[in-house]
Image (cartoon, rainbow, N blue to C red; front, side, top):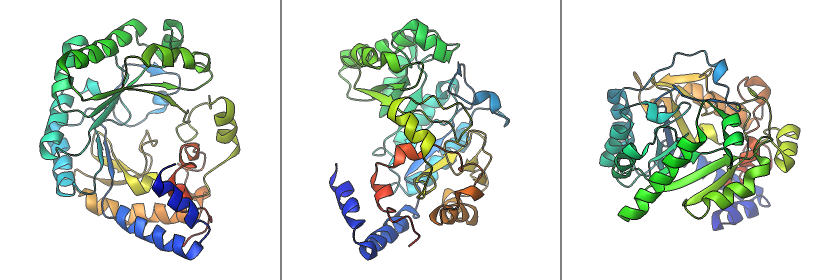
Amino acid sequence: MGLKRSLFKALSHHRPLQRLVRDAVIRRKLGFPEVISIESSSYCNADCIMCPREKLTRTKGNMTLDLYRKIIDECARHRRQVRLIQPFMFGEPFINKRLVEMIQYTKHKMPSTPVNVSTNGSLISPERAQDILDSGLDKINIDIDGASKETFESVRVGLNYDDVVENARSLMALKRRTGRKKPEITVTIINMDRTAGEIEAFKGLWGPIADHVVVQSYTTWTGSVEDRNVGDSAAASQAGRFTFPCKHPWEEFVIAHDGRVSICCLDFDFTVVVGDVSAQSIQDIWNGEALSRVRQTMIENRYEELDLCRHCNNYIFQTDCSWHDLWKDGHPG
């Protein structure tokens, strides 16, 4: 447990001091979003069993380079507050042929701010590997749900296991040959009913060559898909609910390919739109009435009034973090 986490847990036993610290944290977070998630593309070339893509009603598209630059230009003016840029959201980011340019522009304007991308790995071919390494990207996460071809292709329907594995290995090998430190290469598997029996094999397969191997809990996309959690995560996912403010509207700014802004990266269909960066600034939306109203509803624990959030199981990802510790009393300050 880190020092900050230990401190925040201790504060839960001293309520007046806890509220003072909480108010200070909130003021800092309201200055400007810490994480900017930008949907470079909402298209995808897979039909994964854990994805609610078939329920998507909004128009699909790729973000233009001009709109992306507008977003980054504003972020650059607040670079001290932004700790992460993510040029992906709901789709497969490498479908946007300008993605490498977007990453390069971000690193040009904000050289010290990490830029991370998550991908299904199908399009990061050996021919594109050098461009990815040269882009300045800080971290790339490759989702490979399975240690066998049969399991992977039953989960990530439409993708070829051998191609994805070859792409990941080629990128890792090129990074080693060229002596690059970046990007950090992470491979991820979701721990769910279909993959649970291959978790250890997955670690053994990728542990020796990837920078990080991550076993991720399963999200139901705010109750939009079947809950496939297993073990302790299944019990927590099905038994609980948010009893404290979700940290997403306080930390992450989520932008669709067309510029619209939602309150959460799990709002895949952008059912709760709080602004549009095509016509507004990030700052104005972040401190605007719509987002403020959502945050206050969460503070007052009135989740039944938030259709998007009332069935969300994302609290299983947040109960063991310092943000939760600041709200342990369960009451507004």
